[in-house]
Image (cartoon, rainbow, N blue to C red):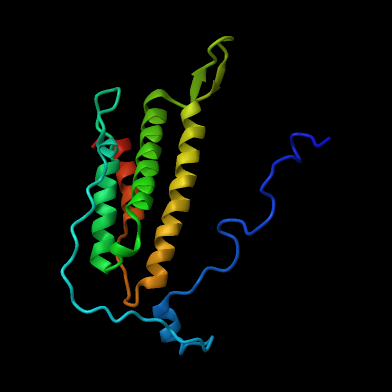
Length: 183
């Protein structure tokens, strides 16, 4: 009879994030197409931009402490960045919503850790334990990073122009630092 440790299921197949990442189309073109496969560069005619999909209300919901969740703002900033580089239509709004929600929750956990400290009191024994917000925050941070990798992979595969400067992932770090300073 299998024990719990080796009855994990889903052991086969490719692990997410494993293996070599795909190169950007612009890199392949700059290197002279070393693989020899035909490059699919989309020749998109100038078109009117589409309006940003309206973010769901829960992304800007009022929190228990009276503050507003920042996920709606993160969603808007990320969508505007994608629109600026011409990839907004390739990324699904649900993926953006998940990324925005995880980033906002991560910032929220970091704020709580800063406010309440790294130690907490055990509910039954009363002894000090690590704050649960630390592990919750780490989980949200990892999830946000995985989702950002997904979004950025779509950008790399579909953007034939060079993109530079700040991206929304950099802005999340800036937002976290501003939250810690209380700005």
